Length: 377
Image (cartoon, rainbow, N blue to C red; front, side):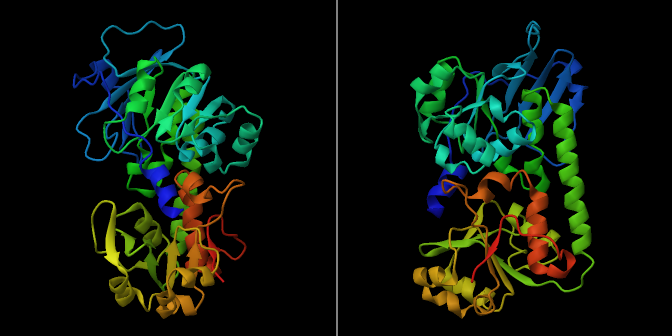
């Protein structure tokens, strides 16, 4: 189940772009660049009547950038601008392919604009599930092969997707049908707040830039307030992160999104000195040797009890954190089984941080209730 979910959210779609160009935008756009605080994956250049979003890194190790022209309705296409996709804004009907996009739509008050989604069972949002049950968000089939016939019948203004490289027949066919395909590469951001800042990406699609800025600024303020609070205590518990799959334990690198939360919660991540992209692939024995005496284990998984862990591997009981009941899983599920963490966490890093502070330093947040994590009993 964990592997399947990771594939859904990490390797959703692969695609090619047919009109990529390296030509620079006119100076009039460059000088009107909208600066981002933490996100590095996109730039926005705004001019009267239109904006241009430049996607800097659509997938890992990409050598091409993409330009999306967001043109106000009724405005003529500027003759001097090159682009890969043109979208009239505000968008009226949208299809997205990752549940991580749904919280941004909900926060901006445009969830009713979502008309289709693949694998709707993965959606946890109560409001979105209501729309699914009412038939207002159509099921588009499997992630790897969207039902093109249903999609074309919906006639969305755009499809927001993402990929790990530039080859996917499904997305190419969508583009050939005349429906714009936009990449969203929020998942490549390394900073905890970088992913949350992608709400601005959707803000421009719906001409709700100011609202998107206000939402992000509040998340940012709450995040740094929590980080400052965590620094008021001296003890730094040691932490193991990651989850084994079959014979391999996948450990986040020390410069990863996951490791930053542990650092900002004023705890000591055991692999903080290991730098890289993706995750370390270690055998169980090496993890046990290094983390046997760790204070906490934080993981994303579907386990609900320690007995379930033991059923999968009896060696878990050798960890001190197992004996001390200091294992926390982000295992809360939506109505149809989707993991809440995968859907909401990228948009709400402030809640992840508060959860970890509550776990590592419970005296700092006595009245706070965990949003994503559950302590295994």
